[in-house]
Image 1: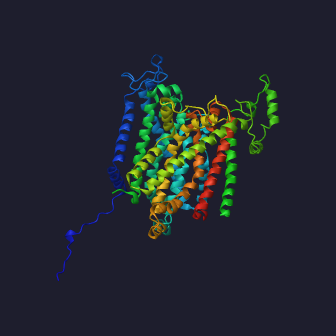
Image 2: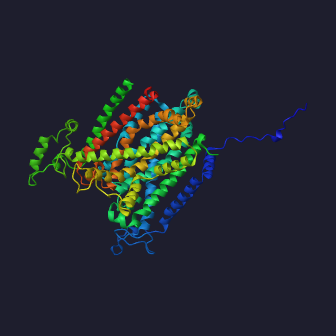
Image 3: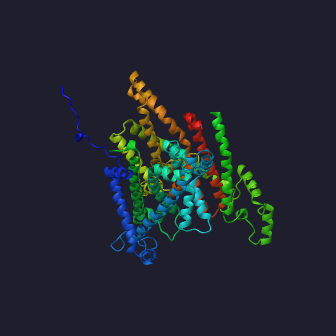
Length: 301
Length: 321
């Protein structure tokens, strides 16, 4: 009987498990829909933010009664609105405003939601109880109505106040999500070990807990960004969102509340509607791909 | 079980108190007071007005005013509407039934679409059926309701002219007749369908995941090995377990519909609470606004309560804290 000896030559050295970012990138590359969405999104954003260097914002906002409700032509690519303003220019400015403002709302809600979620989840007990009761209450409110009422009664209203009001009502969902993750995370050995060693709580939260919930935060951030674009434009559509001086995509669509515009002047509201759909869907597709990447059970590769 | 329900009710009392306090403070922050809602002689001098204010107790400390307001509100008295010159309760009443009717039809549409799609998608997961249903629900998740509703209104209300583009009933038909009822249905279909097509997303996804999770459980394998026909495995075993959480979300679903009525009713000029709310905000008719916010807030708290109770009845683990 011959004895076979395994030589070291054929044994492949197993690499260390790939890093988080690498997995995410691979997952997006594999997902054609997500990759396409990412490219479209990047193209829109580069164009819209880049156009700021070539466009005169005042020129777009200028009312010109000689060219009211013009159909699309070579002068006005997407026609003009009731004030003779170029719809294409407004579309660019509106996209920029909608995206920037939604990004800030998402950022602020993420910071607040993250802080309260981590605190409630990590400490549990009474801290958790108090924070969760507040969250339960705010979530149960009819938020849209409350936002509209608050927007109406604040003495000064501008973009910053709008972002503040939205943040006030929207941080709760995020806090609840992160709290539940933190709650299960704090029972794990690495946290217990650090606590036994006497590591201060703030260090554990910032350097151990936070990195371990980071994938959840990123996915949630992206999905929320899409949601906030929809919410902001809905409110502006109703007339309670961005002030008149800052046109958003919702402003263009709100002209369609006039049945004549809705029925006969499609060039005013259809492009903005399509822009919101493309933005929201492509952000969502990227977010869904990341969600799969973050969850090992759902990974495709 | 009863202990949980009792405890859940006790939680609601401070919530209700807090809600009423916030709504009251909002009402105070709004310009104008109860006097602006009543027809006062325009020549009344400021001293006279001050005297009436004193009599009405508008100069009392806020907690006394709050107590009085809350007592009246509990009895259904929200003051006088500034624009309609009638008690707020009367203004709200007809609108309320329109909104309830719309919400009811929307719920029926939502479940009629979501349940079969969710079952198909879960039962035949990873086939083309599942992929198209999942694709649809991704689209629904990413589409804001006001854009979808506008497109629906444009296509079916104007371009094809299949449905009326506004109102809740034809003004020519007589109340109580069959034509009246048909006209009401005809007016409600488009707004209800627009909402339902978007609102199915969460139910479809939830039902699909539940079915896929249940499929591989031991009780299903037992049923199969006993020789239960495949259709019965689904209808008697898997679905029964997968439906429970869906039923429990009914309360949240209603809550969402009431809150969302503002957008959909505005687009379809449907005379319900949401549209009344928005027009009252624009007209600064704050006694109506306050009443609607208070009522909607109360309704959403009740909806959450309903869902929590059903959930705890269905899933005993929730009761243990």
